[in-house]
Image (cartoon, rainbow, N blue to C red):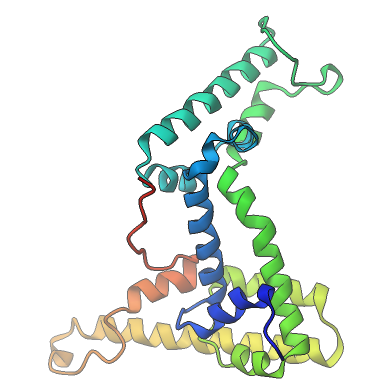
Length: 244
């Protein structure tokens, strides 16, 4: 099957040696979204309106800060805090200047507002739509492309979270014999991948026993970061680019 633009990120991830190609796709989107948040876009009114409204989750606010664009980060934080202060004053019944943001008939409580804010994030929001399309593309390629099916079945497996995501996506996007084959190959890739990394971790432990001191490390030296990928969907960290 001739490769299309929208299939390139998926094929690239499955061509990698990552312990979870879905993690690889997500991390690329995440890095791009963090860089975007601290790139020239933060000066655009429509983008600033979104960062003011959504803010950042705990994970991504740290990554945005680590881009070391201190002026950009300060500007985004200042206007986001302005927005939060304004909203809270409205909810607390204090007089404020400007347009009322909440419908009086369906006004949130302060508690509802803070909980909603805790669950919102500009970076997560930017990632999610594209990431969902990537998952749909996996289903599309699996149905249409035999070479991808072979690549999929021969992958190094998946992390726990994305394994479950693939099973759920297959239930919605596949049917019949294609679905049965997908589930069988997904289960096989997941279990064999987990067992392989588990065995590497076990050998890592054995190397601390004097009986194995002169034995080769085999594939155990980097087994712990790979185990983290399998169980927690986190790839080994690489140096982050600095925006300025």
